[in-house]
Length: 395
Image 1 (cartoon, rainbow, N blue to C red):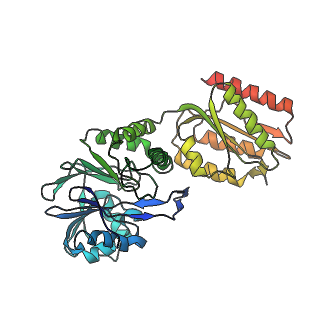
Image 2 (cartoon, one colour; image 1 turned 90 degrees about the vertical axis):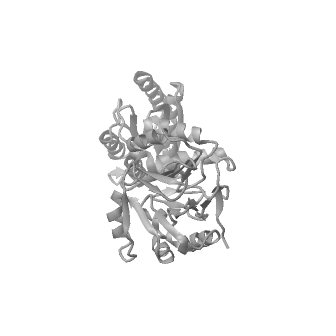
Image 3 (cartoon, helix red, strand yellow; image 1 turned 30 degrees about the horizontal axis):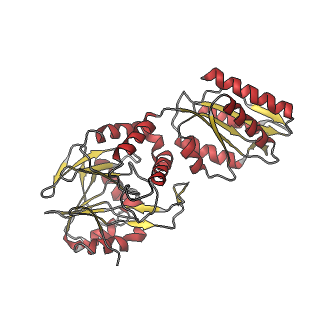
């Protein structure tokens, strides 16, 4: 039997670990996922969030290790998305006397998701409170972090913020707290999670963060990953940096190549950035998944994207990367882009990349760098020098 884990007196983690899941919304979850749900024992027994439907039996086992599920009085759903709400129909059946609560925006969405479950929700808005005994829960709507319906729940008595998708990480581990887990790995996954899930909504996340900073906190309990205790200052500091959308003086070079000509260009461009004093990494999109690239590229001032021409278009892998990257990356006029690539018959590939970067608000101080056939060393040296000059001119 899978049992609950106490995280505070009378508060239990009743979630589940998805060790083998490797994909979530197009991003690679190489460390699996955690679906967190929390049970509070008070005069009104309260469940905060559930788990993905296929793990509902684990949720029920963990709850049953603490209390008869039928004794649950209150169910709070901070978010409609099914990795959080998927077990609500089973909870409804097992908890016949429970009252269900969610944000105002979530009420209609839940009706669409779970039409046959017969769940009636009480709508909550920012500032609303719910007394469950010695605890009073306060609710704050956090729209677009990362869906319109999101909210967080604050337990002032225990100084716990049930933060839903904010401050999460996609990582499966048996350690429940940041202090017990591999801190470097947790922060790496927190960054990757922000880059691939929350980043497009940085402005909204910043507003939510401003509210969080006013709370007296001993614990942040997100819907995914480990629970923050001793490292709350560190994750708040990182979210402050990320939500400010500031750009760091570093470069990501992302490319695909057929016969290495574009790859040679990428190396020369990298050397140009390095000579100008800019930290630079380059990624062949055939070898590195776009979600891993996003974790690095998120705060880069410079982004260089290269593609040869294939069938009068850019390479499919590059088009896939740009669709993913530009869908997640907010417009920022401080970003500097560079499009490059080789071609045989027509320079369509690199020019198409240029057009996509331009539409997304990049500064483009150089025209698309288009190379016909193979580069000579003289050409590569000249490209390196021109990139260095471009960087120095944009500092």
